[in-house]
Length: 544
Image 1 (cartoon, rainbow, N blue to C red):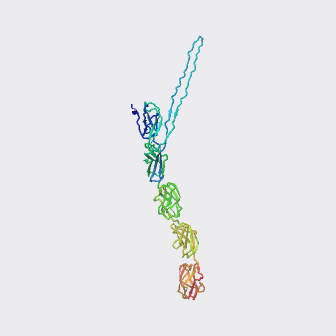
Image 2: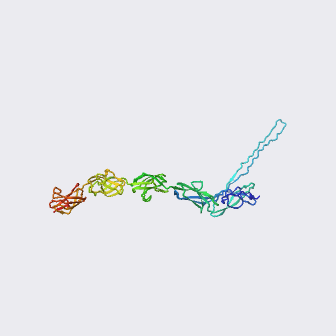
């Protein structure tokens, strides 16, 4: 019978070769083989011997290392992430099957007992002798196991021939005759660069998310479908005709962030000076989040940054509003690695100008004619503030408005008092978009009537019969002022009063001289609630 017809079929052929194990004996033949898989049987006939069967053990191909990386490692939800797997060949160690030798056990002979035939004598006594039995015990049988030293074979970068010597045992086919010999087995090794495919597994799933062909030792898998959270992706190389498969020992990790979303801000309002503690609710909040309140241009450079930001949970942030904002209602934005929140119906925050408060005014008094520089201290002062000094009816229409109002800071204002006030002590009020300050102990200011002073009279002369229009300049002139031209005894009963007196300003009065005067040069006097002007070099008027 043809030996070939008794060979079992060769199946699952894959041209990998690592180690050839022969079942109990050595095959003395040199052969080149390929397309063999684990468990394949190879017939290797030799002259003078029965055909032998060689079993290919551990035929998984040349070993490989698979590594995987991700880019980016932090991604925004619904944006692409690329995973790159690289597969490289690596040296391998082959260990021949150990040889076990068991000596044939030795049988211990059965002990022999000899009993002599009894002898009869005339004597009445009979003697029987029984020899002592002798037993021989052989030493125990020793079993020795020999394990060959492992052989390391490094695959070269090009196709080569590797010779491996294996120990063979009995023929595995029925009726085969056991033979012993040493035979070199020559294996042809293929390309040094792995080919084939790589499968990518997301978060330990049993089925791959994708299987991609290798190109120059690497494969890429790009996905935009990762959910929010942390993910682990591994890569498995599926092997080819030369190289065995392998799985990445360390997976690639990626964190996917959601774009934050703001649902509400509480409280809804706060002062433009900032410092308001707020609580923000929404989704997608992560440590390191940044909070800003827009000023009409989104989350850009003009937005007001919040301080003391604490991410309490993925749905809650606490913070303190920043100052220097414009009054108005603006959108609040939260920024994380996932992006910046969009405009929603719940992200509104209103910056308002706070109600101002006056704590002090210096100096405490000034003339009713105004012109006194004052400094006001307090809180809630913002650009555009208005300052008035009441006249008994609060900040209403009768109040005297200050001029040259300057908001130095949220706590300081400078201004110039207005004139035409009534003498007395009144409240100073500051009004802003946040409201008008109330009446406080520190907001008092006293208007007093100053003693008038005459600097000049024009023209310098007129008829004794009167009727001459004149203009008087000086200071401390207030409504109700009285003008007279002395007749040698000051403002006494003989002084000639002027008519049609009009206080044009605190520094100017117009009037008409009275008649019936004595001819001569006399002093002109102005009298107000603050007093009567004294004699000066510029108050002379001549009646002709």
